[in-house]
Length: 158
Image (cartoon, rainbow, N blue to C red; front, top):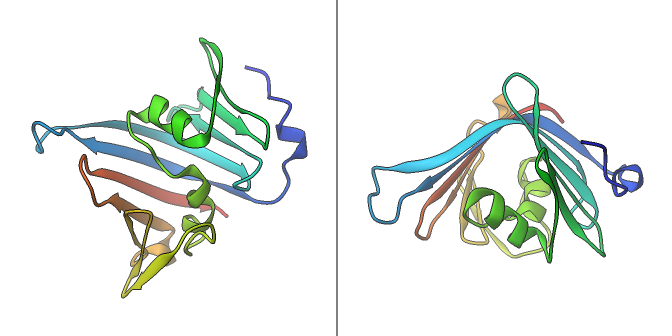
């Protein structure tokens, strides 16, 4: 896969680590689906790139976005989306607030939506962000409405 044209314009922020997403089955709460791998998040909520790789380093997908387009590139080809929510819903089966991840992965609420402070984190966009282990580079985020989605990140390079 070759880099998308959005990438050279991105220089604001880079966060790398491991990421897993689990979605609870609506019919059987004991069943979960999902996956994970290494991630590299670059840019900001307006223009950025998110790469997901297998544990052995093979690129699974690269999402790039800017004011005019949202593009997903996989080994099977490229596909455009109207927005980041649509892209995450297609990739994961549920919407993940990708724009908010830029704040969350820095241990703070995203400035694009209201949040409620909690003892060990905050609530934002229907998600509870647990920062109790953030000092160790670990973030846990759980969507509070069904189906429950759990996102776990281990940040390796801020």
